[in-house]
Length: 216
Image (cartoon, rainbow, N blue to C red; front, top):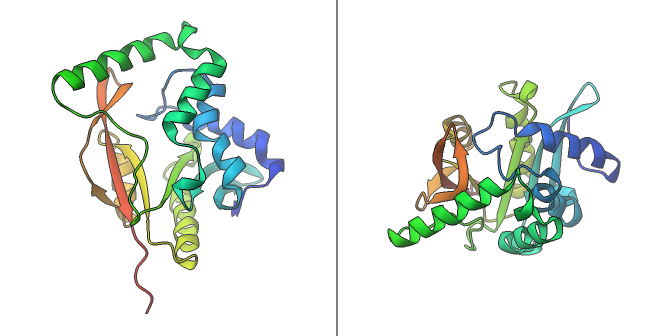
């Protein structure tokens, strides 16, 4: 069943947020879930609960899609990151320090080589909406992700939104193939994502965009 978020879902959604990144190329950030939640989940429950779609199987949450109809509704990702890192003193935590050290090195190296680093935002009126989608490991490959995406894309079409963007990783080929099946196309460059590693290797951001088909 696909439905939208209610405050009663909060604890179960937080638990799903903790599980959904397992074994994902983008699953390991700075290893401090409360601060990661402040950036990638809490803003959507607070500002966009009506477009936070949940997938439920036998009464248990197995997937979610945080849809934001207009990115201007949320604080910028840089602002959210600064607030989360400062509040939780994340850079002083032993488990998190390697991530931030790698981030500084990656950004310095990119600057020296004249290359850009990844940005968490796209400011383009053609695609004002954005989304994040995550599944519990047991829900992958079951059709749940497609059901969540269809619910979100139907909402956007009914709301007459001009379009939506998302950001994934070039190295996450399973995700990019899925988004292509949903009608998204690659857009822009593929900059390095500072600090993030997958199987010991650096990763690169892939922006993808989608617009609803014209009404007949």
